[in-house]
Length: 398
Picture (tube, rainbow, N blue to C red):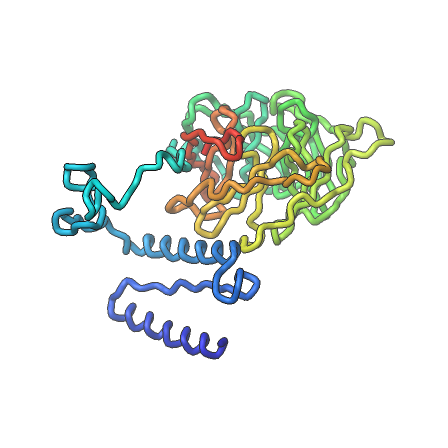
């Protein structure tokens, strides 16, 4: 079978090349499906279907980028009877199919989809700042007002901050200037920000290459940071795998390890933060997510999507589409209930927005994460969520 498959694919690629040479709008859609992706000898399982969907999605996006997708040709319903063309009901010439009103092609069953993810563009909300780069941008709430603020961590360890205003436009930001504590041997790539002491304001963290970390408490709404614990965290993994984010919703950011395959380990913040040297700052790390089959490597991110204070699990695909798995709050439970509810696509991909540009943060203070595109110069475009609906009895905006 493999020999026949290889021979077929070779001829198919030659055919595609020939059609392309003739000016035909033809693309190859390679889909790598193995035996582990099948439910039987012929049909894909859920993983196989996901691989197929991703491959077709990428091909459609490529065709669109080539300018091949056009508005559909207009067809007169009178010239195509029985195809369902038209907008009318019984007696108006459309909508009832070739069988007329009695025994029609369609029977109303009411609403089957309550709504779908809808994003409204707010355009550019932050312009490029001096020496700004995408890699320097940190998004965190500095003053505890519920709106995400803008931080740049420069290469030399200097940290600059801007407070966001109620108006989502480039002129609404207030510069705080340099905000980093007096530190040495800290460069911009080491800087992280998260609320580690539960006061609602983002604190500053220096994350070293081995995963160890020092913390400074935010004592003046982003204007001043004082040492919290010089031995705040020992290294459990290299820094490229470590995220500092509140997983259980208790207001204290936790130490999280996200591996290449998407599996996640969680060390819960004990709320000690160095106050009692006899007590640990962290509980023992435990696995809370095994990874999602078929997901691209190094694309899992933890971010609070639904505003409940608990980090959710997201996967960003090559085309910019984002899949979401909502944190159920069962991470500390021994009941055997699942840790995550898969709610499918939470962002379908936006033309011109690639995976490395995508961030989620609550910019307007409504409690729900907004979709952001961070440009290479550090400027930010925003799309605001506009539809509220429920998934598994959980309030969610998309």
